[in-house]
Image 1 (cartoon, rainbow, N blue to C red):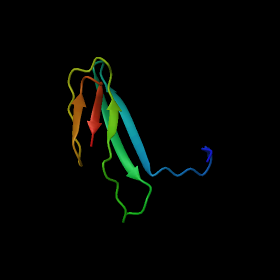
Image 2: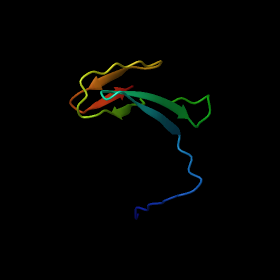
Image 3: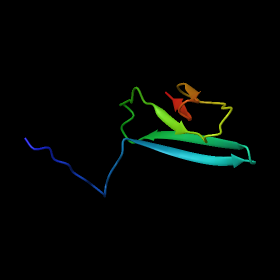
Image 4: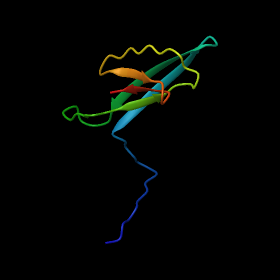
Length: 83
């Protein structure tokens, strides 16, 4: 059987939307506000969702406030991992 690939450029409905707002605070700070919204029925649920949020290379201190799940800064990868 030959593998096939398909591409759709219109009417694409992704299951999850990530909405990000990034604000610079002075010359040394950045504030991220990340919202995740699902595009499927409320009776369904997503499990094992991991979001990696990149941070600037010169990041030294990260404070995570999340309403759901857990978030931690991984300095080796310069990302905040939100599970």
